[in-house]
Length: 199
Image (cartoon, rainbow, N blue to C red; front, side, top):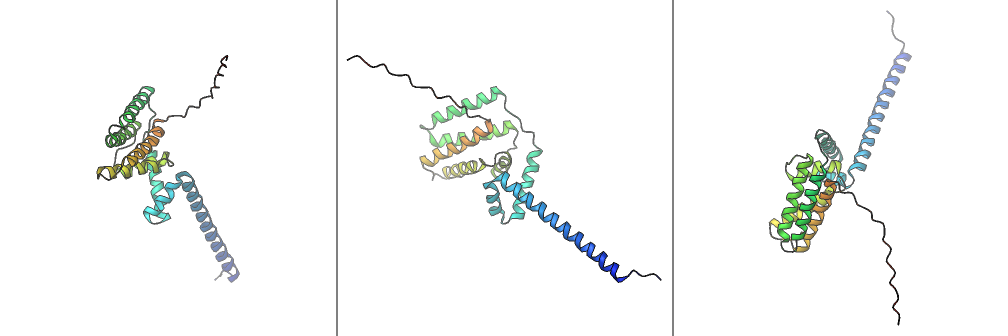
């Protein structure tokens, strides 16, 4: 009976161990690369999610699930007419703030929801909406959460006027982002020289 020499068993075992180590190293590198990508993409939302879910593994799984869910959505760009209608509604809302700050916050929240719906975001609970927003607008989702927290304080009757103003500012940041308002840079207009009066 032919037997495999012991040397060959050691060599075969060494090759298997090296292949397993290479596979583990590749998996670790892949996971680190994925973690870096998620951290860079989501920014502060990454850290908030890690804290909220109690660990990096759960948070990264949640963030990837968000991306997959939003990838399945059919998000649309507004027509110019719709963009103009939403802009006008926002301007009217801001004009009413001085007379009715509480009402303006509720209207701002409602207008943001209408805009999200028009763009194609599903209208689940707040956490689902903010998670969906975080995929394409990770830097602005913190403003949305801050606005919502103030709106909840307002519903309990404990938000002051300055907080309500801040809520509208936060809602406006998300509104502009969803509306896809581009900042228009205006060229500086030189001041006209004032003619010297004759004495």
